[in-house]
Length: 325
Ligand code: NCD
Image 1: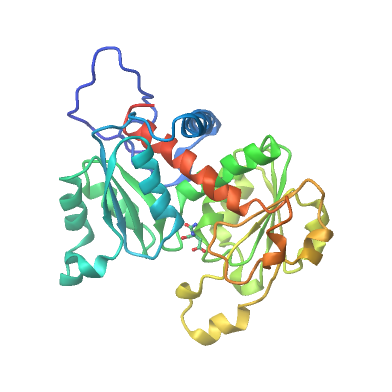
Image 2: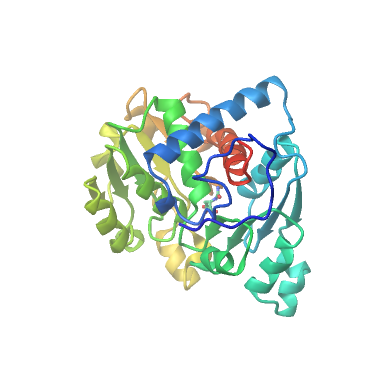
């Protein structure tokens, strides 16, 4: 875990959480139950404030950079909404082909440039480890918004918050992850967070898209029960949270490899008619056919609510990292 030095002076008596301030957020490995509890409590306060006043001045004067080398709708725009609802502003670079990156500028140089103008950088990049590389070059906090097939910590934080809000707790739940578990960074991060709790994880995927073995070994060490199957029917009835993911087309070596597995699973009204009455269906989105639209009207469909929780969690994270929670 890295904690940044800061030259900023705080007014006497201003409170900040020493466990978050100035920190790079690179992996969910930086979190334990205590830190999650703090984050979720602040996210709850953020929700209350948004409902009451909409926008407020907690991070007035702070500037965030959003630096996205891969497409994004939710992650990028929810960080924009988060900093703006906190009274700060954003430098938005979500098409690096129009920046000096297209002239061959390195990631460290790009990051050093943008941190000259802002207080923290949210980075999405196609390579695993890119956020760590950026953090090593930067003086300001780097928030990993997805490093290739590596991690997507802020998504997992909002996923865990969604589960707590919807199901009451994380302990005692059976979570079934479905889809592209090999390339899906959100499930890599979420599995690590679930391992902090008394949970059971089922992995449902074609053999070729199974959870990476080193990650399975890591979760196993934490004492969490894991089960692999290609058949959703084998685990559906016991599932409390069904976490559906997209097959990550952009991470396949050839279109033929993708075609061989695309459309492997589709959740329909019939599927969830076989699931628990009080379970939830989640998805980091975008969906490209894995969940039929007929599921959307079922109260168990939590994926649209999940997006809103995401803004509160990102507001909480920004407030904690920038020191004004
Ligand atoms: C995810 C991602 O980028 O990893 N999207 C997101 O941030 N909500 C999931 C995906 O692209 O399939």
